[in-house]
Image 1 (tube, rainbow, N blue to C red):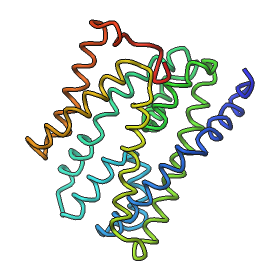
Image 2: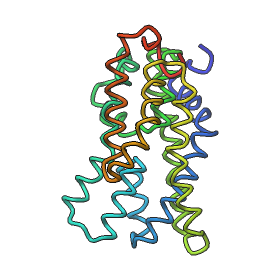
Image 3: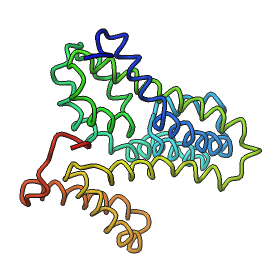
Image 4: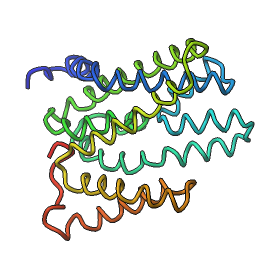
Amino acid sequence: MRGFETNFTSVISGSFNALGVPALLLFSAMTGFGSLAQEQGLTLWMSVLSTVLIWGLPGQVVHVELYGLGAPLVAVALGVAGANARFMPMTLSMMPVFRDAPHGRRWNYLLVHMISINTWAEMLRRGYEIPSDRRVAYFLGFSFTCMVAGVIGVIQGYLLFEHMPKLVSLCLLFLVPVYFGLIMSNTTHPPFLLAFVLGCLSGPVFHQWTQEWGLVLSGSMAGTLAFWLRNRIPFAKPGKGPGG
């Protein structure tokens, strides 16, 4: 397949495909995070390390919020882990993509850390179109480019904090969930679409019931119900991925 003759060209292809909406999205969202981190008293290096080591915007927001409140390290670690718990099912759903890849299994620890909403959606949509021995290289090129864009955004937001209205920085933070919602709403993969619709319907109800746990409860209910219905009703039977 053209563009995947070697690992190097696969990395370049992944980087090229990331240099668009995915990288721009993370650059913008992380600009908002950088502003928030500066407001909460983190140093620039702590803000960058929070991005690279946590690599999940909800977990990063929890990190800086708890840090600003002076919470103990254990509470910060548990809060970040809970906010990023969604990466477990995302990782499990991506495992078949790399099943036939010839890379050493120890590299899986690096691959798992590089997963984000962007890379997860990209690999499930395009991964099976890439030769199995080039998927890891493509994934690393795509995800590393996204991470670099995110780090640059953090630095920009941190340095421009005094000149950026707080409302703007908060709106930038919401770009990631909005983009994720657009990805899921445009999918032709029935279980994903069903989970998205159920989440949209149940989210406001659970939020009115309990603001602290509304998102967790609605997400758990919608995902579980979509999984249960996937093989029980005809239109919910799974396809090949987010692209159908």
